[in-house]
Image (tube, rainbow, N blue to C red; front, side, top):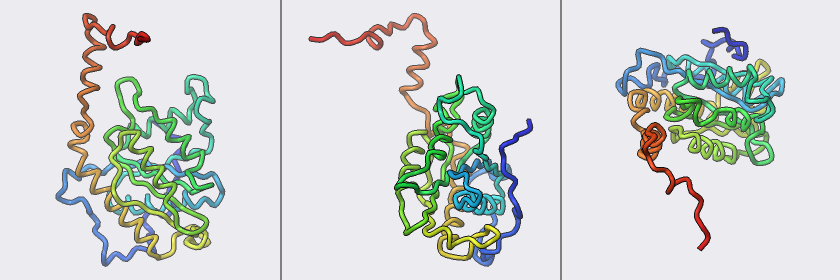
Length: 252
């Protein structure tokens, strides 16, 4: 299948800010089966020509490639707002959901705008339903959250992304990245300069790979729920009496 909305990662093997003396090429070695590359989908939250959330996402993607992951960066340039396309019938929505189903883990990176994630970031997440038929596009997948800020360091966006990840039933890793004064952290070519902010992104991507490999054999069991098993059985059994569940309560 040909995907039209994946960004081509420039210079995927060029990591000028990474000190390879201290890096582990296989950070998840021994934690689980890692012969198959972990499949990571990356989303960013700005359409500016020089988008620092996109640039930070691309740095994260290069690191994930270095760690042996298979990465896809979704380009949301023509993604409609939720409920704008009738029955969600739009090629960008279909493609985003296909990438979500393909993935084992995700990276969400948003600018902080007016103290929150951007509308574009939220729109992408809103286009990922909890269920697509019998398939769940996000449940049990790992998630790393990142943000960039134009001013001093803040954590409003990553805190919101954590809340959204929990709502989407994802395994959100403990570490996170928040890049302050992002306009100072990237050179003219859009590459991140060596800094503690870059080092934190390395930490986060290492941890994401570890959690993805650690949980890949167990993701289904980790999100297996009694209430869902019960609801599925009742739905498939026509003899089940649902009147006590579905009938509205009468005022006393």
